[in-house]
Amino acid sequence: SLQETLSLLEKYKDDYKIICGGQSLLILMRQGLVAPENLIDIKSVKEMSYIEHDPKNSIRIGSATTHREIENSPLIKKHFPVLVEMEENLASVQTRNWGTIGGNLAHGDPAGDPGPILIASNATVKTASLDRERTLPLEEFFIDIFETALEEGELLTEIQVPILPKKTAVAYEKFNIIKNHQGIVSVAASITLAEDGAKCRDARIVLGAAAATPLRAREAEQMLIGNKIDMKLLANVGEKASEECDPVSDIHATETYRRSLVKSLTTKITKKAWELSRAAA
Image 1: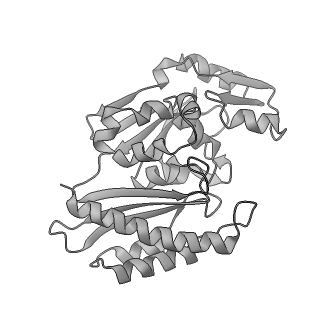
Image 2: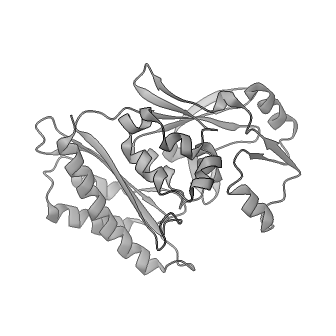
């Protein structure tokens, strides 16, 4: 049960890792990057696997819910089709059948797929320990590369995604060389238009694999808010996002290449979110 799990976290808090899907953790263990004394397996804690519509107008997703369950959920398809599109391109079917949304977020990989979309959707996460529960915005959950706000003895238990406001849409895309592989860069954008559809009322732009954590491009967002959107503005927004990001060079791409991708992808995805918001109820 969840209560038993929290008791184990308290008992072994000096040296443990949570395992549910293990799609990321087992790789790190095999490479010798982590060597926990204790593994606490929560795969059978069924009370942490669910997708529900909350009366407070949000979707609640248990942290042990698999990617495949999210991909096939009628509730997610109805309210957040972009999340389904993301899941369809996340790794392989085998990985999605076993890997979990909570494990993905708690892993803290800046190249993870769900983070940018969920932050763009203004999601929050719920955590629990024996002593307390707390809720915090997902964008505050990521501290640094592979580092989150989870404290010792604390477990990520739920993701809460508010139903999108009127005239709002979210779009997402990752750039990768091979389909379903980890993205070299990804961009999620949320656009909310004014009632008459003439100007942008709110915007959120989140970059993946472009910094140590999923990154809000706040200056780029401000260029949209209060203004009428056109292609010239969107091109400038892409340019600003490429200046705000802080990518690294690695075996997948150079810093310069990633900045170029951020520029073009941001322009493309904000355009898509804009077009979808114009058609939204």
